[in-house]
Amino acid sequence: MKDVITYRDFLYFYHWFKNFVKDFYKGKDEHEKWVIKLKYDHTLRVCKEIVDIGRELDLNVEQLFIAKTIGLFHDVGRFPQYEKYKTFRDAKSENHALLSVKTLKETAILDNLSKDLKKLILKAIEYHNIRLLPIGLDPDIDFYSRLIRDADKLDVLNVFVELYDNPSKLISTIELDLPDCNEISEKIIEDILANQISNLAHMKCKHDMKLMLLSWTFDINFVPTLKKIKEKRYIERIISHLPDTLKIKEIKAHLLSYIELKIAKQL
Image (cartoon, rainbow, N blue to C red; front, top):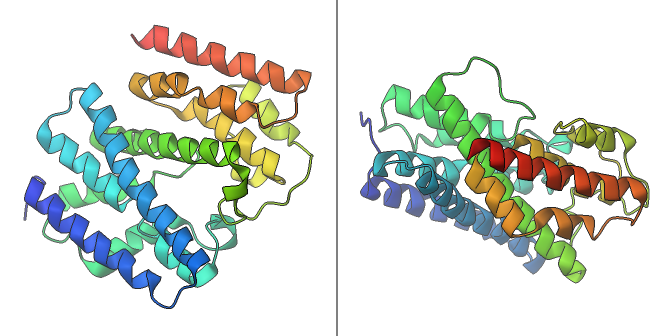
C-alpha cells in the first residue's frame, strides 16, 4: 500500500475520472451534456485552485498531490446524483459528498493507497460541503478539509459571478431550482451580520442563493483565498445583483471590512 501519491498515481486517477464522467454523457441531450460538463470543468478548476492555495502555503510536492487528488474526487458523486435525480440540490436528492465517498469506495479507485492516506482523502471529501467542520478532527484531516473547502468555494464563487454577469446563461439546475422572487431571507441576513455561514435550508428564492454565497466568507480558512476573493471583487459583484437597499449596503460594508481585518490579522 502506498503512503504517498506521485505524479503517475495522479495521472492514473485523472484518466479514471475522465472515463468515469464520459459514461454519463451517453444518451443525454445537449442541455444535460452541458450540465455534466459544467461539473467536470468545475472539478478541474478546483484541482488548480487547491494547488495554487497549497503553493502559497508552502506545501511540498507530496502534500500538493494529496490536495490535488482530493480536488479531483471531491464532487465525483455529482454525476450519479444528476443521473438519478436531475438536480444538484442535496435536500431534494442525496448528500453529494457522501455519494462521492460511496462512489470511491464502490469503485475501489483508492484501494492501492495506505489505510491512513485513503481515510484522509475520504474524510476531506466527506467534510467538504458540511456547514461546520467537526471539532477535534485529526490535524491532517482538518487541514485538507479546510483546503478543499476553500478551493471549492473559490471556483463556485467565480462560476456564479460569471453567470450573474451573463444571466442568459443561468439555468434552474445551477440555481438549485429555486423560484425567481424578490423576497430575501432575513435569517441569512442575520447570519451574515453575525459572522456566520448560513444554512441552505434558509434559501427560499434565487436572491437567497446570492446571500448564501456571501455568507461563505465566514468559512474561508486561508489568507490566499481571502486575497483572491478581494482581488476578484466577488463580494461587490454578487451584491450588484441584489436589491439596492440599506440592508444590502450594510452587508456589503460588513463583509468587506471583515475580509480586510481577517487578512491583516493573519499576515
